[in-house]
Length: 496
Image (tube, rainbow, N blue to C red; front, side):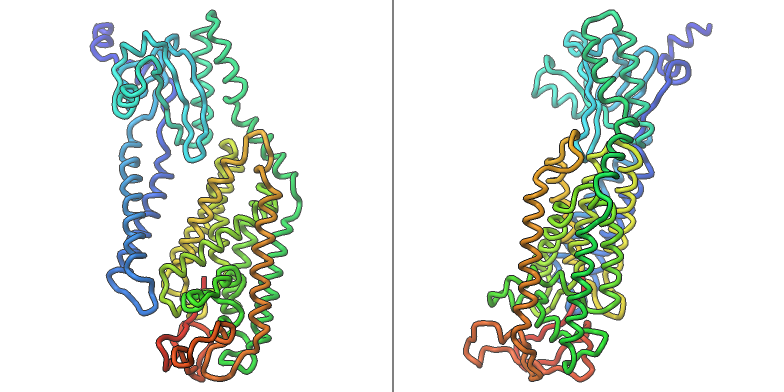
């Protein structure tokens, strides 16, 4: 009677009697990604529903809705699918419901390989060809085998679970295959995998110890912070007698020091994309950016090296300035290091994939997420009544993500630091020289207390009738308040 029941319901028997490990995708991680995507898609929809003066055009809002809306749908689909097991290890073999029907016996596994692709980790399994011919393949695996041919049959088990569960799964998988093939010569290949890739804990501890000891002090982080503070005090020193006050640079001062806006760049002052990230519009603006810079810099610079840290900041800052030019009104002046700092957090999240699952990777991802997400949420107001340049934040995040992907490509597992660190340091130094040089050269022209902005003084002079004329109100503090003007457009300020 019992025997008949087991034969009639073999799946139930496997789940209750023979299953010793089931792998499922981490639902908490997927839920977090889905909620973040939903939040930003809602913010983009709100931008389209209630446009405000000085806000980027509708194209930017549409981009946010489409990008995060599609991302939310992808994460929602994976969240629903996470209820099903990704893979099931039994005493008989392995079951992968998304790839094939039935159970693949342990003795039928020819080889397996753990692969960390940066954005995803998988265990690639290759069955013997005669077994693969008789398997009932499903979904994407079926189409892939149709294109490659069953002689090269293999399937991938995604390992998007917790690091502890991933390590247990891979260790158990290889141990079962080795046990089933103990008397076969092919087992030597599997034992190599077991020794070199399955022991995630030892890998993580060794790599963490090397990276932690590599650098004791974040010199670039400290130097960049000091540079931002010095330039801010220079802004305040030049602010006397202008439309600002003793604590807040005026828009005139931000324009004179190199704030980026399309009206100036269209007339040839494109070096402003280097100088604008070094300026700040208020003390609160500077303080928050310096705190965020130290949060990411203390660890990220230690892991990737000073050269790459500076290069990621520089590239992200430039990307933020370019995105600000592309989407902001032509008379909106953008200043602040936030684009570069947001890029550092995005690069940190991607670069964490270099490390084996463990404490270091979890710490890098958590730190990046805790600061990156809040930096993009308060999109409508900034401390002190200013406005946040979220186009620059978004551009910095994209630039940082691209550079983070480059870091992974140039960072072999055997090396403590990414390759070409000296070349990265040269690029960061060039950015600093150009940015600081632009700030200094702009101040060679004295600020004018007249109604014309000082940036016009450094431009090739067109006919006087084509020059914009601005009239500054006495209450102007250098923040988001608009300027009265007699010409086509007058600059307004936005923080990033």
